[in-house]
Length: 307
Ligand code: GLY
Image 1 (cartoon, rainbow, N blue to C red):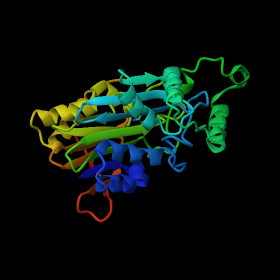
Image 2: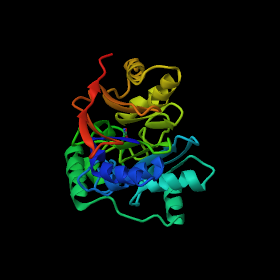
Image 3: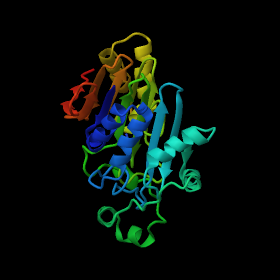
């Protein structure tokens, strides 16, 4: 049994470990961990109280993958629901599709009676309003929101830069493996922007035969490099975990133009080993691990990929 989660997953790893100790499948455990992060108001880049897009709307992305069946479920740009990760899981379990976005995702969430929640808190709304006012001139302020947003979203960022997406990778007592991820994406993003979290193969991938990977930070980079799928494929080709991450780092290094910042890669293999590595601007990354035999989860520091 093994769980790896990023810094933000600290609030959920205890529940995830309990689920595995109780004999529950890896997917149940990973989902349970993400659900706790999604409702924690202290985490400003996942779920409730996270940062809105440039129009002041909180659009959430989430995905799950079952490493045994290779089924996936994802939602992108979901507005108004408490636990996007569970809606993503329902996409996997109830539909012949893998991803729903925007209005379709919200319609489906209503259909399955997912719990509604206005994720935009007064505090996040006030920060958005202040940032917007500072960014607009008088003419733009008068016309907002009927102005071109493309220039404004060039300032898309995370006001608390080290805070990020949450990712969970788990192996259960039966050898099942799963990934689950959730995020609000970049603060002040262009409406409709999907990060890597709902894009299976970019933000996460799990194959119980080889391993799993999930990424945080700059989704625009891992989408282009197909990073999570690449790591699992490198494992399949016989590379060690560490070499698979270095190879994925080399892929990221080849990206030219566009948004180039940092990425953190979390990976496990089918033998129960793990490695977490940061790339580019992502420095000082830490993560949580719990494995069979540990009394409590441990926080550790990721290695940096100098490729
Ligand atoms: N990695 C999260 C995002 O880019 O939205």
